[in-house]
Amino acid sequence: MTGLREKAQLLRLLGHRTRLAIIGRLAKGPKCVTDIQELLDVRQANISQHLAALRSARIVDFCEHGKMRCYYICRPALAKSLLRFIGGDYPVVERSAQWVRRRSKSASDGSRHDAITAAPAGH
Image 1 (spheres, rainbow, N blue to C red):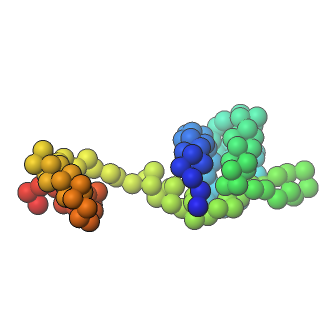
Image 2: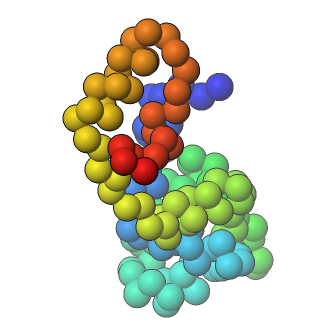
Image 3: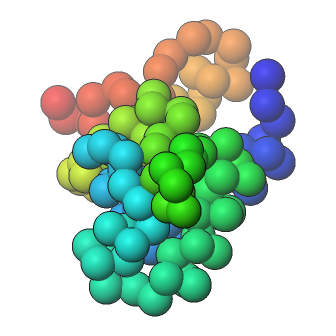
């Protein structure tokens, strides 16, 4: 299993808007650098740098067609999860002090309770 350090590095790599946009475009199908450049209105050199970073993380790869490189997603499950995540709506859930005390006590007692998904106090 990959450690937290590697996962944090991957999240940092994915945390750039141009890279997210590239992944979003490539999720719809393979594209050549010039196609990506036109779709995103970003300089080709900049697109190439971002593609190199994504390629080093093995998120994208390419095939050569003559002099053109066409990029595609090589970790589709990751791309799908990422796009679902960034497209989601995650409301803030308020917790009462009583709810927090009750859950922290049950956690320290060793009882098993899912504090993340449990309904807020009063629900």
